[in-house]
Length: 282
Image (cartoon, rainbow, N blue to C red; front, side, top):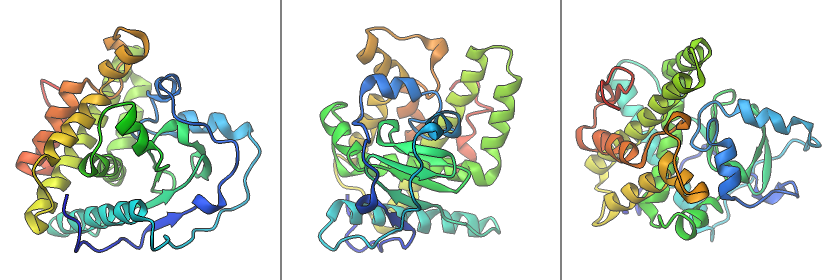
């Protein structure tokens, strides 16, 4: 992935040196426990607020990214690329793009949605319009999920930014209302699946435009993203954890669905082609 000349975003908060102790490492059991609400960004308040009983941290101050921290600078450049892409898309439709902030933390941190933990994986909090990530998650992608590579890492950020787009467009609120009105849990989960797949498609839209503007993609990059999408499909995660999948409990989509919708955005680069809610086949 070529990001050499990409500017770094000014919307990164580095809280890693003011971390609270007691954070946990990421495990499959924990990921499955929070998958319905958190793992890739759907309204984390449902689970994050469970952590409110923990001792509250003092307000954490963001610090500049160290000059020798290549991973943090990579994340900052990816965020900058999403800002450039979505800024142009919004401008072309006559709107301004209020970019999200991205918070780097270790172990545990406070959010407007409650107490965030590394065990939850990357997530987006709509209450403060911030993406949260503990960079140790990328080690999990490589070692546990067999999804290494810089473009796979960029896909994770672009997916969470996709949830920010949904928040700006009011889609997230509509889905939450629909979930509350659903006849049963399986139906409510289908709304969540469509929301997550749309965020995957938006990640593809970002990649399409970023590559068109700056030729960021190199040989093998798309395959990296596809491996990552496949690794975090509900069916793959459930089979890895318990040996079988329960489709009615899916909240993020299967490996095949996640790959297909990311590729849809990547191929056409059109936000209007990411309407997973009207699609007859998700």
